[in-house]
Amino acid sequence: VTEHRLLAELRQAVGPAHVLTEAGQVEGYVVDWTRRYRGEAVAVVRPGDTAEVAAVVRACRAAAVALVPQGGNTGLVGGSVPRGGASAPPEGQVVLSTRRLDRLEPVDVAAAQVTAGAGVTLEALQGHARAAGLQVGLDLAARGSATVGGIAATNAGGERVLRYGVARAQVVGLEVVLADGTVVRRLSGLVKDNVGYDLAGLVVGSEGTLGVITAARLRLFPDPPSRAAALVGVASVGAAIDVLAALRTRLGGLEVAELMERTGLDLVRAHLALGQPLAGDHPAYLLVEAAGSTDQATALAEALAEVAAGGALDAVVAEGPGERARLWRYRDAHTEAIATLGIPLKLDVAVPLAVLPAFLDEVSELVAARPGVRAIAFGHLAEGNLHVNLLGVADADADQTTGEVLGLVAAHGGSISAEHGLGVAKAPWLALGRSAADVAALRAVKGALDPTATLNPGVIFPEP
Ligand code: FAD
Ligand code: MLT
Ligand code: ZN
Image (tube, rainbow, N blue to C red; front, side, top):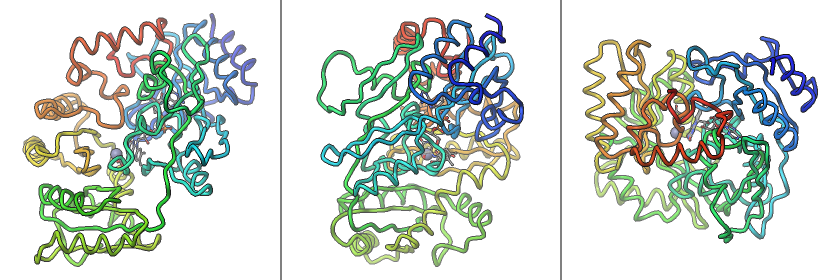
């Protein structure tokens, strides 16, 4: 099928206004958030409903042209933009943007669930839930652009996994267009539904390689009346882990435990012209937040006093939304602040808490052996999930450096990709993260559901 015929079919499917081909129109869709990944698109198409998505998928499959599903394009592993260079599929790629699939159904308060279109942003979903007196159990700094479909497709984690779990724990059902254009709809919201395999569960975390998610049914949670945050200065990551352990036993409502290092905090301070958050300067910082029906600021202050056990913790407790937002900016601005220094090598890893300090020491040694390279680590401490952002790594050294760090992770029984997915960035290390038997099973599933490799080729599975 020539490109011309495909374009005609796509225009037929979604209307000419939603088939973008001009360079100026497609720019924002063909380069990823980190600016490390860029490719050419035959077209960017913006279907308005499930039937249009199915028509687009069928047209691409018939034309043997690859399809790259895209939501908010905030993914950090190159999975949401067309592949460039040698790994680009021969017939090119079409980007399918879900942004117009932005329907939000009324919140089902009794079931504490809601159905949202794949293109709904996390921020819009959060506002919709709050208006109904409930809350979304997932949050991440890209909330303004990240979409429900992308969050499900990457099985995103974020900053409230400690209490509510990862995206998989929030997704009760999905509507998915499979690679042959058929639609699987599991949006009943029934938590008990053991009729055959959990197809929705299989598509969560599949990064656009098994189907295009068009809608999701999500759990919602009570929005407790009292919420307080605290920023604690600590002497080391090990000390932060000790504070976390002490708070876990004292605070039933603990939701957040985010680790920062002084390097990252100083970078954010310079980036946002923020003052020191605490009286002193510390090697590391722990941002915690608790929510519950009793006064959480008092509970947090008392728990921290007990943890200090007569010593002096340098900490500040924030109760009002403005005060809490001020503390959160130090954490949530890390990614954008780092991005102002260039394109980092982003390693999203998790290791068991017991070995996290030793792992980080080994990373520091590895970095010290590389002149001009520095590491900024931050992230979700309770899950042992840190974002090791390496700056100053030459492109020619990127694969070797990645391989060495991920090798350390694997040696510690960790995960080579804790929450961002593999995308194209980490696909080459799939065999480091999964056994041969496991990889064979994944390939069998991919081969069964997408035998023509139409959906996001190059993602998860390394190119032959
Ligand atoms: P996109 O980037 O558009 O796509 C991501 C992947 O999902 C691609 O492989 C794409 O093909 C696929 N996909 C997207 N939509 C669909 C769909 N409807 N159907 C099928 N496949 C689809 N991630 C975390 O897990 N935790 C964090 O704390 C976190 N913080 C971040 C902070 C910042 C500042 C930024 C920029 C990113 C952060 N991320 C984080 C990464 C990113 O926000 C998540 O991966 C998010 O889930 C991506 O959503 P998206 O809609 O932008 O997806
Ligand atoms: C975060 O937790 O902010 C992210 O996952 C982003 C990052 O890794 O930069
Ligand atoms: Zn993260």
